[in-house]
Every structure is written in structure tokens, then in C-alpha cells.
Image 1: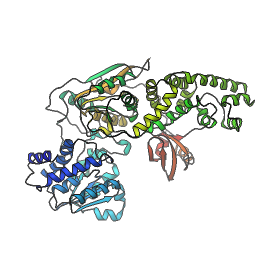
Image 2: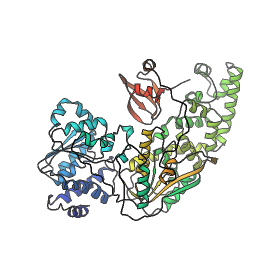
Image 3: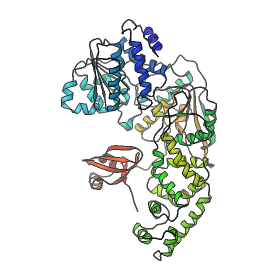
Image 4: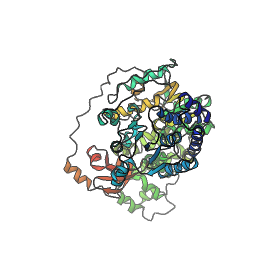
Length: 622
């Protein structure tokens, strides 16, 4: 790493400008970064050579444009310390403040600074927006810094940009690096408009367009450029490259949705160059991870969370399958009975099952109770018959029976349930046919994923598109780029971010880019559409295809209706959010609610906005 940095500084003409020991110190910084990155998420760049070039030398290039000697600089949202820490090493007289919202990152940066003997380095544990609301901090920071540097500016929020304006109000020197075509964090309030309005907000500012792609082949760059130009909310630019034309972009049309995992298994078994399988959601990788584990094929994966396994749909189906082997488990039955085609009220069923003997099944107790109407007896007998067959079916057929014939599919439809996980669960079931073994295997897979060890030397990588941002691979395979998942939106503004996400995924490829598509799903004709794939390959005209006419939308709920609904949203209430799924409302401050979601974690939402847009509702219980 030290030699790469030294040679790079020489190429930039900076050798005489920086301290003699700067390459060695930057190399020590990089080594500590890679070591800490094993246990703390600091950077997506894990190759020493890339750390040297994409972190250290990129920061050093700023010295060509700014005089940092005896100046002060604040690095907002510093993360792993770039560019602030690197600039401090290169220019010892520069006073640097590193501001970040995560205390453990700053503790680590403090240790790095102390280990390198850096003086005049300050860390501040604060969110930028909170710092802006604090009068004491505003007074402390405003006008203090000669230069404000912001990296990944397309990922910062509106309020963070307001803070940046405040910080730059003294010197007027602000340097922002960003690409609105790679703004993919709208769900975290990223505000790309700041890039588009830069000259208006900072009069006299200059915009430098970097339109040369040094990564990808001409085939990839040309298609990517034409694809992203479909977006309207962006600066006009024309991406180009001097690289070779390279291989054509390939669309692999598989016979069935489930075949993609075997296709990817073969790629992994013969993988000799850096290859990434990219997808929108972590769930998409689960059947592939399962298959790779069963076959003992090495892979690298950044995924560690196991939210899939605790999601409502997966918990429901596993509960229902477990009951097939323990039909006297009243508590288990009470967790899901109302989601099946039984039509029994809670008060009735609780009374009938109260004090039930341990040697009888739930169905026997209900049928012998004498407390059911004739039509209810028919429902219970039918469910008893279904359950008598489940243990003898394949796990795939058992899940299909629950969804199609036992009422669970109707429940999901009525509750606007997220069914995207059903395909993943069915794919996993296909790989473990026995119902009993399948239930045990799900738990084993969950534990395996939660304990995945980093494999930085493995060429076959599984990653979400979001996690791949900033990285590059010789070969990229994009999966699940199907309408409803990617893109998952129809509204113009949301569709543009979906297109940016697809663009980011495609432009991770250096040499070869593939899209996996399919004709059937689990042996049945699929109505799946792959509009982004078609657009990327130039098969659809520049003008967006006309969508099917939709019924005219109503004006939405009135203020009075929303005010009445708001009364029900109190701490302890269970809710369902259109995007984040089910959760528990834990705190309420005016119109804002803090909700702990089962899958998405804790979020703070504006209830008025969510209710007006019909994005949130009370979770229904029978």
C-alpha cells in the first residue's frame, strides 16, 4: 500500500509538497482501517490497493486545487475519516474537525490520530442537523472553517445542506463531490436537489462535470448512459470512456425462476475473476446462500442480519407447519388460527380451548365441545383434514397448500401483506423437501447467516446494490430486476430513484454485465415484466411506455378524518406501514411517531403525511 501511495503522489506532482513520511502514515492508517473493518462497518472498499487509490490518493488530489496550509476544515459525516484524516496527514498544519453521529467511529478515529501522533485533530460526536439546531454549536462552528468538504453529497439530507450553508457562511469555500445519478438513499431523506441547485445556493460557484468513465467497457458505459438519461431530475451530461468495446451485455432468459440459483451455482463453481451477484434486497440471496452452503462452494457476502426469518409471513408459515407435528399446542394455534379459513372469533375459540386436555388435538377439542355451529364444524373438519396431510407433503407443496387452499393467501391479500418473501421461502423449500427437515434447516440457515465471516479473498461476492456502491467487479450479474421489486414504484419521482438504483448496480461492472430473467415461476407461466432490463438494452423507446389506465384517485382523506384517525395512534398500538411492514408504535410527539418495525428497525414517521398518502394503517386482529 505504501508503494502505491508513494507512486501516486509522485504522479500527482505532490511528493515535494507533503511530509516525507506521509506515504508510510497513510499506509498505516489504511492498514488499521482494514483491520477495524472486520468488526465495524467503516468502508465498502476492502482491497489494500483500492484503499490506497480510491481513499488515500483521491483525498490527496484535493491538494492540487486548494491551499490547506494553516487553514481549518470540518469533515461533515466523516465516517472512516475521509477526506479529513487523510488531509491532516498530508498537511500537518491543517486544523481538522471530524463530525459524525456514531461515537464508536469517532473513538476509533481518536485512537488512529493518537497512534499517528497527529496534533490539531478534533472529533465531534453529533449529527449535522442536531449541531445546526444547537445555538452554542452554531456559534462555535460558523465562520470557523476556511474550507468545507462534503463527499457523497447526493446522499445528504435537506437539513444537512442547510447546516452546510451555515458553516460555509463565513469563508464561502465549500467543495462538494456528488453524482445525482447515484442518489439512491431517498428512504433516508437524501436530497439530490442540493446538487442541482448548487449555483443558485452558492452564487459564483463552479460545477465541474467528470464525464469520463475509467472503469467499464464502452458497451456498458453507452447503455448505462442512455438508460439514465431517461431521468428528468438530473444535470445533462454524456458519459464516455476510452476503454475497449468489450463483450455485449447479456440477458439470460431462464426457463423458471428457481433455475437462477443453479445457474449462479455453476458460475460460483467456476469463478476465477471478481464476480458480484447484485440484488435489491438481502432476501434475494438466501436460496443461493443455502445452495452454496449445501454444495460447499466458497462465497463472500456482506449480509449479516436475519430479518427474513422473523418477518410476519415467515413466522406465520413456520408456525403453521410446526403445528402439523404438534396439533395439541393450543398456544401455537392461537397465534395463527384467525389467518386461516376457520372464521372463529377469538372469544369463542378461547373459551372452547380453555383447560383443554393435553392428550387431545385442538381439532378434537373443538369438534367435541358442542359449542360450534354446523357450518363452523365443517370449517374445522376441513382444516383437520388439511393438517392430517401436511406432514406427508413436500415442504414446497405444504406451503402452497397453506396459501392456496387453507386461507392464508386470502388473509395476506386482505391485510395488504408483503408477499415478496413467499417466493424466497418456496425456493428454500424446494431445496429441502421434507417439512420437518425444512423447519430445522431454516433455523440453521438463520444462524449461519448471522455468523458469516468476511472472506475478502473470495472472488464470488453476493451483495445488495446499495452495499456495492463505490465498488467494482470484472463480472456483474443482476438478479430480481422484475417489475414490482426493481422497479417497485410507479410514481415518476420514485421511479427515477428506482432507475438510479438499477444504474448503480449495472455500472459496478468492469468487463461483463448480465441480467437474469425467467419465463415461468415454479412451473407455472409467469406474468413477470423486466421493464428496466428492456430499457437498458434499448428495446423500449426513449419515451416511457404508457401505463394501463388507472381509476381516478380520490382527493384523499379530509383533515377531519385524519384528525379522528390520529386519536387511535397511541403508544402500544400495532400498525402496518406500506413500505416498512408491521411494527409497534412506541412513542408519540405531536404528529410524529416512533415505530419499532419487525424488519426495518426503528423509524420516526409523520403520521399526518402517512395517513394522507394511505401508507400506514392499524394492524387488524380478529
